[in-house]
Length: 509
Image (cartoon, rainbow, N blue to C red; front, side, top):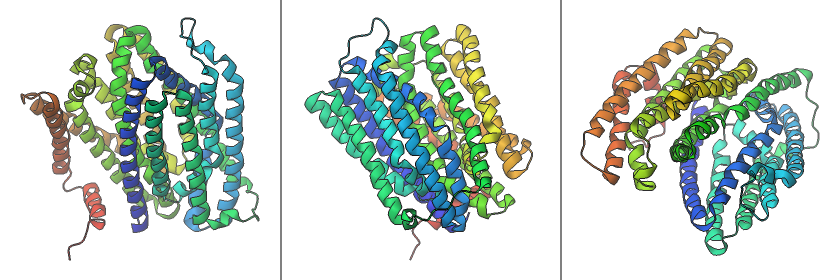
């Protein structure tokens, strides 16, 4: 990568990492305040309404991702006229999407009580609470398209700093509201106000960064650009529909066949793994625009070298984090909510394995997104949506929750990983998929071996409580780190990572 692309990627990564970490802590604190100040059914409403809004967000149909991909090349080439034309399309599409979401939400609101079941408690203002969630999602589309332009221009750190700043302020306001008023409606009003204000601030910042956005002389898009957008939208529709179909499957199967108690235990582990995934995902989200710029300017062989380095970072990070999880997560659960909320270690192994195999897709997903290869992976999500519930139903009987987790591992590796890597290698780099498979197996075997060693070492140390969490976390992270550094000390990938890091370390005088 050029120094400017590296600089922008690193700024994006550090802003995303720091902001997401602070945001995760804020969310944990807000959740603690929520549980202590409001009745349990309100926490159930949060989950239910969030799921419903995931379905309503299908109105996007992948338009945003398709237009963002189309912005990479004109931004890299300084083609302001094409950027203006694309942003006008973006604005019109997103305003329409926001209006559709709010309209459909209004139609659904009077009937939302039907989803709670006959024995559900009587919750006053239920329809109003639901519409608050709808409004929050709908208004987010009215200005967010300008933030997407900043992201596409490799300056995502600008958006992240604004977003996380508002999230922290919102968290403080919501905690104060909960303890002072115990009022759920005011709690939701804080959420809506934060969404509106942060998007307005981002839009103002975008107008200052790109003053030509305010120009009125905008040319219509040519047919070639529109056809590319339509093709990518069709590919993304498959992903969105299948994503909505597959996301809740695991929890539904666990609840139906293993019981609510198991689901509630799993929820604690899921909160931890999702928080970690979001932090790492932000790293790869931050480099997507730089990869898009790379694809527009650099040779195919250079793009391939950058992917190999990115995949190495991907494998390195997830080996260390997965090791830390396996060796310390049960100790953390005991400190946080008590021993009674822990799974046995055999279940934890499969929770961590699912976390690892999903995480190992980050590099391929980033390049798929940056190259706009949605069309070539359209059937991947459909296959996953079909086989995940089928395998879950087959395996949950004999193996319980482990069977559901194993179904997730199998579909993630055999369908999602293979499809995404094939799309990037066949249509991005024009190279055989076997190259990816060899690298993947090497990384996975090294991770399994090093994490196994870390677990054996940490498990024989006679400590409990906080010390068990700290020692487990240390060995879980350090041992895979050491194994990767030693195993790849002479590799081009590690040399490039070290070279990039050195550019941004303080120089000795």
